[in-house]
Length: 231
Image 1 (cartoon, one colour):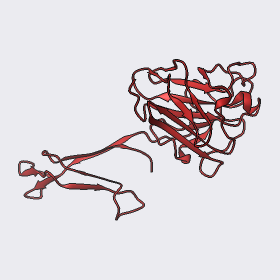
Image 2: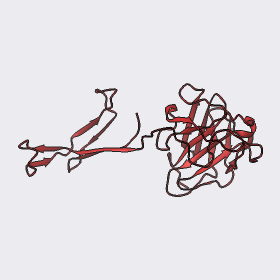
Image 3: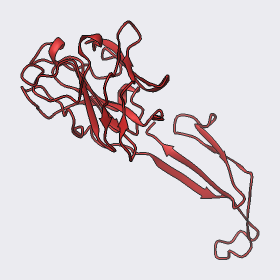
Image 4: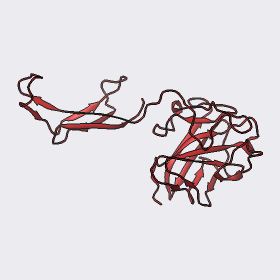
């Protein structure tokens, strides 16, 4: 199966449960951003250190859906949820700083490097949640913490949509046409001609000298910047 970066996104992380021990209660959730199911069987989850685990059975993440990977299978001792896959003791989520790296077929599909509260949340008994799977999940500011209780009373939404982090910017588009207007009058259009091959730069509010993106007009004078994210 040809899984591409961005198809599967690490979406929620319970690295430090409160109601149960870390040994029993750690888990993380992934979401499928595509319109077809994806099997993660054979993929690898690891960190930048010694933790590594090969997903050794079929693990289907449904289209637009979720899968929860956990240390313990039993809902009576893991905090009160049913995981989709159990990796056991071969993969551990550090309470402070750690990484979750998903690799499939030798290709890195996704990575999160949380940082002990420097930019990411650092909760106890609450999962960290991504505000949108379309935002960069390796940017701490795109994460917040869960507000909904589950199971034994920790906060999180394993296997379900995340709680809200507040307003979310979803991918957007800026587009337009570059035209030459011979008479300079907005009331007439017959004298307008399209301008092909013009370079169009996009700037943000922080800099007027270095563009954040560059494109050029096509034969019809049209230009477009797409998949624009917050920041």
